[in-house]
Length: 167
Image (cartoon, rainbow, N blue to C red; front, side, top):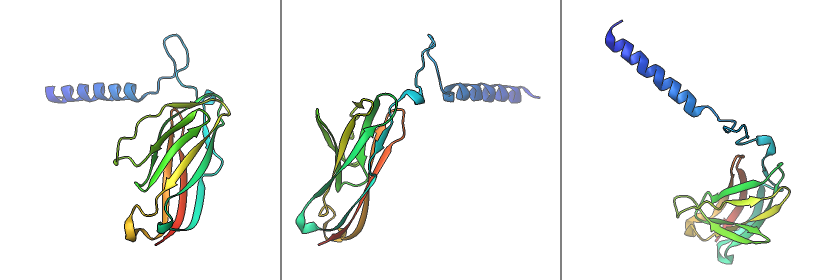
């Protein structure tokens, strides 16, 4: 082997080792405490994940629906972000302690981290507001939209709705 081949193999080996160490999940802290235990974390579930507004009119204005969510895990659940799939839709987190939002579509304004914690078995509501006139006269017909609730250390909750929009 020549000198360049040996140096190349050493660089590749060090690179692979670094990549493996970087991607390896760290399961404990130096003191042995667990960083994240999926069996002891919150998990957000929705009572319903789909709602059909039926036929709605642009002229009648905005429509809304409340999706109930609940922390059905074994610890607190941290809701980090809420966002929608279209600028015609907004979503807010509604709790007894107040309201956060409305939040919209990424790319059409900053979507901040909300960092709201739901205790074990605690419920909240995601209020979804759809403006059928947002797309103008071309926005008639069948539509479907998605609302995503991101949860730290858990799977996101996806809520969808549909409607048939008339002028």
